[in-house]
Image (cartoon, rainbow, N blue to C red; front, side, top):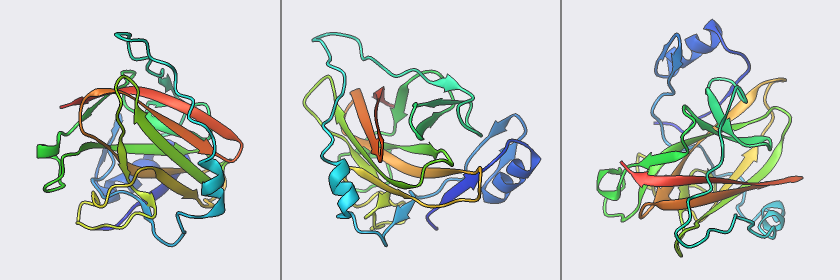
Length: 217
């Protein structure tokens, strides 16, 4: 298996043919081939820009005791391929529905033997206008807790699924693509229990929170 990062420009038959080669596409619905997380072992996770981005304070919304999770709102037609996405920055969280509930595989059903962490595959879309580094951090909002990631800068694949080792944050180096084409990153979010979670996306010139519910499938 190979790590995978892809770019796209338009809807239509050319895009569908490309997806068929990678793992399947039917007109009306698009699917991405099962694959391990995108990794970039050649750039140091200690790059000074990552250090600077990590200085941005976390600014997740406050959650009142017993209050509802203030989930973000997906919007239609923000990016190609996926019908819905969340975000206003150049980095978008992709989804097939308006529900911000991530049904993750619990640890016993996740391909990471001996781990107490479950997880779910997440696709990120990056606009053609942005080139540079991105730092994504996350935490649980309704209880003291954290989350982990797989993919990106510094990820090595200790197993064939790419689920080990886990990383405390997600670091991306968005490289050049042909004009007008978006980049897609495949990652895993890892959870130990259900709850309300947030991820903060920091890049050069932007910072944004995305809030969702994680629930074991």
